Amino acid sequence: RKGFFGLPCRPRPDATRKGATDGPSKASCRLRVIPPVFVGVGGTHRRHYLREMRTPSLLVKNLPLVTSAVFRSSLAAAEEQAVRQWCSSTSKGSTGSLSSRSALAVWSSSFSRRPYSSPSGGRSTSSHSPSQSPIGFVGVGAMGMPMCRNLVDSGANVVVCDTSEAALQQFEREGVRVARTPAELARVPGLKTVISMLPSAKIVESVFLGDQGLLSVPAEDLQPEFFIDCSSTGPECSVMLQGVLDGRNREAGAGAGSQLEFVDAPVSGGVPGAAGATLTFMVGANSPESFARVEETLVPVMGKQAVHCGSTGAGQSTKLCNNLVLGITMAGVCEAMALGQKLGLDLENLSKVFNSSSAQCWSTTIYNPCPGVMQGVPSSRDYENGFLTELMIKDLSSAQQAAEGAKADLIMGKLANELYQKSVPRKDFSALYKYIYNGSPCK
Image (tube, rainbow, N blue to C red; front, side):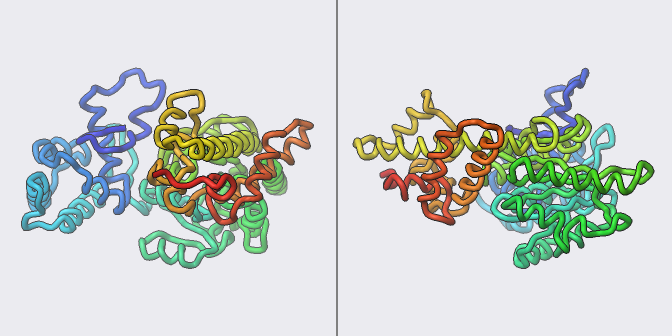
């Protein structure tokens, strides 16, 4: 996870492809991870990386090697001088005569117009490359926004669709193309793949089957052929939509070319995972080839891994089971933390014990519900901007419905669902700690 200069970055997929017989040398491995740091991320992340650079003198020392390895060419003399000047002044604790904003402009302009070129002719990572097929992204809410941003920052040619005019205008100001209806998105020339991240099965069905839905477009005008739904809907919705696409395929006949395909790929990792591109995708795909296409699209740009769970709908079934465990364990952690507080325990120490013992789970290590124990999680901001309680209720209710159909018992899941239904709406689901168990912040 640490690349050149000790900066956080992800290696390119071709640098870690399984089955390679001749692995690159240690030195070339270092160089292979440079492009995503400076080229394969957008302006916001590029500024973050440069701002966090701890050893700019190392860049100065190796600048010719770095630029030749990344771009197969050298920086122009003025560009190299500006970068060296900024690095030198930064290493001395000042910005000198060249402001960091000016230096960042040099980096942005220099690197953005030089596409990364691997020895085997790797593709460009510059945004909106004419040679790149556009990718549609529908739904830029709490989860979809950071996922879409990671996709845009990777250099993909993204077309964003959402009902929020404010969100669309923000993307337009950043130079990202938008579509104001799914039908408009479905007509974008060359757009073959659509990713959706939506709040409910009802909205997913509307996006596909509504009057202005993706499939409202006549077959001869419909551009996308591959649909990846990352929403949490339950398996019935996914199976139904694949059935609709199968019907369209039969109507088109064998000579129609590409077949329409729906893949369910719900996620685990929450908003932090979406922002950090560390999501796990649970994929229901009807063939290994379809799964490989999903994996190539989503990993590592938006997540750390994709797991092929079975055919269409299997990803949603896996997500139901996963969130069943999540809902139950979060309730248990909230209950135990509140008990510990009332027993006079130090909650930070209690959390340390949890994380190094049999109580360890995602809710203790990544998403602690007690305010003051962990920074950057919903409990640290009054349970705002997280996984809404309503969404947990929806998932647990879907799990109960699936259990009834499968004649399975859901005793703990039913009790947990009742707890969340008594909690406060529009807050993160970890708010159980405060609103049900009357827990106080860690002091």
